[in-house]
Length: 221
Image 1 (cartoon, one colour):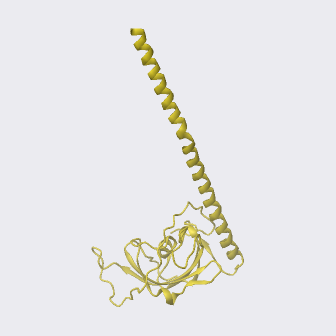
Image 2 (spheres, rainbow, N blue to C red; image 1 turned 180 degrees about the horizontal axis):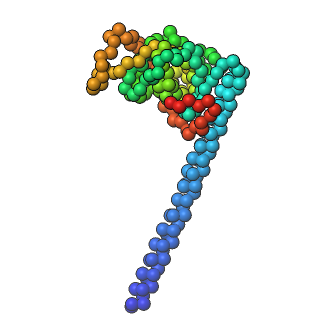
């Protein structure tokens, strides 16, 4: 009788063990497939970034008289009008007043300055294009800067759901008219009431950026 009980217990244990092992092995291809997909996706993104950067580098090479600077964030800029007198740049919480024009990488206007209208931006407190979010903090008052943004720090895969398409590099020209502390912030001085406010907002971005490698003439934000 005891022998029969032991035999039954052994049989049940064996069936359970085999069943668990079978389920573990059955899940393995799903994990492998997921890992393969992620790797392929990462490889595609790297190739896309490299391809867009090659196009931008050709633009820079074909314009030897224009001085472009590479930044740590993976975009390039050139000064159309520079202010070497002022030393201050916008910081988090400031209100920046600027004008903006957006072109495709071939120089065709997507959004004109007139179409977008005067822009108002609460620095690092509003969701705007990643490249502009960083680039504005490099500017001085009354400067005009042209930025060359790869898609991963522009509007990425989704575009802006209007005129800017999937994975589209952009040329953005920004004139920073002024920036002042937020008058509603604690301890902030009162802002000039004559400051111009925006009538339209810069299209939002959903892009995520990969890591970038510093290049020559890199500016330190």
